[in-house]
Amino acid sequence: MANKEIKPIRTRADHRAALKEIEALMSARRGTSEGDRLHVLATLVEAWEKKHYPLASAKIKYTDEPLGKLRVVPNFLPAPQDLVFREESIKVTLALSKRSVEFFKREAAKHNTQYQRMIRRLLDAYAEQHARPQDARSTRTRRRVG
Image (tube, rainbow, N blue to C red; front, side):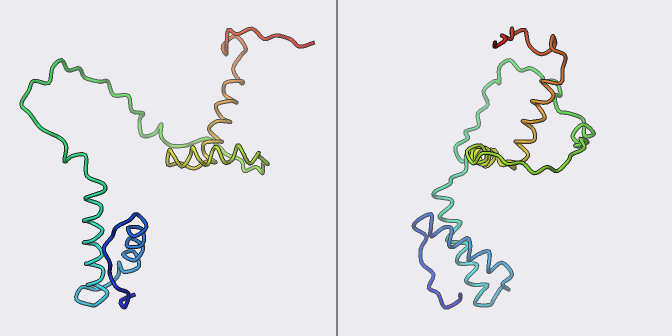
């Protein structure tokens, strides 16, 4: 690695490559050639990120203007004990359509979660909805086919 020439970061691919090399050099000691390389790469990455991913806080302008009418929002967060997942789970093997799995994988990636968790929550919501007595579910009239 130390023999490879350090070049400016011009593209996202250059940026990814520099980050990958930085990761490999994270245990380098200061004052060594690897440590110096790490320092230079980190400086280049920092400059590139500052240019391409500016912080939103740099655009904030503070003033002494009145805030206007304020209201206190009631605490809507659940209690810590309510955050513990207590539901017993059972592992199952299930064949799903490729289209469905790809959909859940895309959505999970957008929302930074696991696609299996999304499918489980969907099934739990479905089961909960249909486990209620008929009159509590919906006022919609069901038509009989026949």
